[in-house]
Image 1: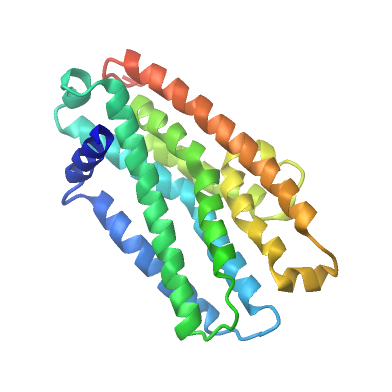
Image 2: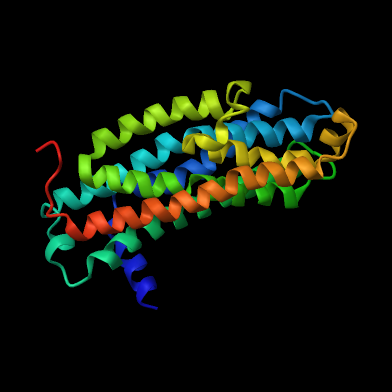
Length: 262
């Protein structure tokens, strides 16, 4: 219950800010754009797998820059409202403050990605008229996209409060390029599991291995490869998320409100 109160308090702080604009507008605009894009194609043999791959690839490649902006805005908001006084001298412990903001970020991402996917599925059914939609695999894509991006939330929370919004966005921009190159191309086939920015892209694409279209194209059962790819991404993603979150919490408890560049 107390966590819900903290989440509610953190959400109220975002009223009339750019944060809410991002949260409310992005999951609506994105599927509309993707539906318009795929409305120009109609290849029944591979249409659904192309829609899935394109939808989640563009989404997950963009997550590093979106998360860096989101966390940067939250840090900037706290800095401008009393130079972090609520964090440093408020009644809420720093640990609860830290987890409240982190959970708000993650929860917002879950809701946004799910909503965008839900609207995309509706569009596929009623606008594009795609047959036999693999709803379960799209939902897997949502879950794996979130799991792969968890470390980015912890990392950018730490960067935003330690170095400021500018540094967070700059690193997010670099992460965007890395995710596009390592996560979305063959360049990263042998190294993606070691690159945090590539995890969300690669994991989101794994459910495609279970689509009948993929099995038909490769002429083989891909279930073993499916589980191998899952383990390669999920294990480091969860372990590193926990480690970075603990490091961030320790730093948060010792922080005095100054930035390293000051």
